[in-house]
Length: 242
Image 1: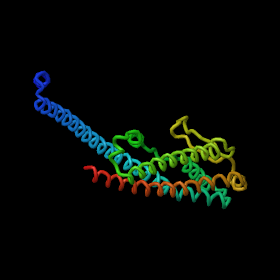
Image 2 (image 1 turned 45 degrees about the horizontal axis):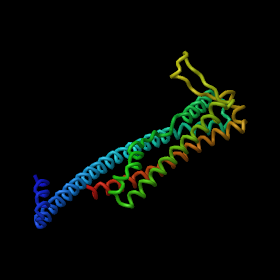
Image 3 (image 1 turned 45 degrees about the vertical axis):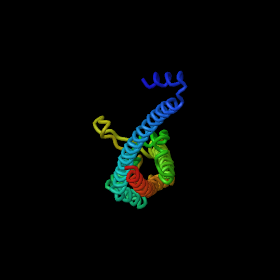
Image 4 (image 1 turned 180 degrees about the horizontal axis):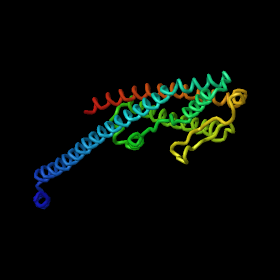
């Protein structure tokens, strides 16, 4: 109807009517564009808030994983130290050998946390969400992403090296499987204590593995502090967007 009146006005050279009709068309188009932009902005804002909430949950899960591994390391401190003491004293009693076996078993436990980063990866690819966030948060996001990647790589690499060099290929470390039960398998020292305590390589690697456990605990606690700081940044960003 509007286009028909517009065409009729042109034929009559009714320029006032032409101008009015054109203005109405232009206002309608601009209003529609503005409405579309407003709807898109609202959708992006909702998406950004949802992504931040999921990221918040992921960071909390990672912190829980860190706490779990730190607790596991701390709970076995006495066992590891007792094994080192038994080895250094060259105690040849069966009880000392059992203590050393327990220490080796404690050192083979998995102390590497499993991190999640699905939303972290997703957000790094969503420019329409990042554009709505502050510069400080985007910097914090990049820093946390790099820290998480570095921690994961370093922990996996060091643990794999320790496992291969100190357990799998070490001639003084063996494994027993009671009643052929794989789940009950246990790593044990090979040879009598008076030979093991004089084996410089065995003593050094056992001690270095204990030290690595202690240093890993400190590394995990440090990353936990960084994660808590990033969690606070997420809270601030959510408050600003909502």
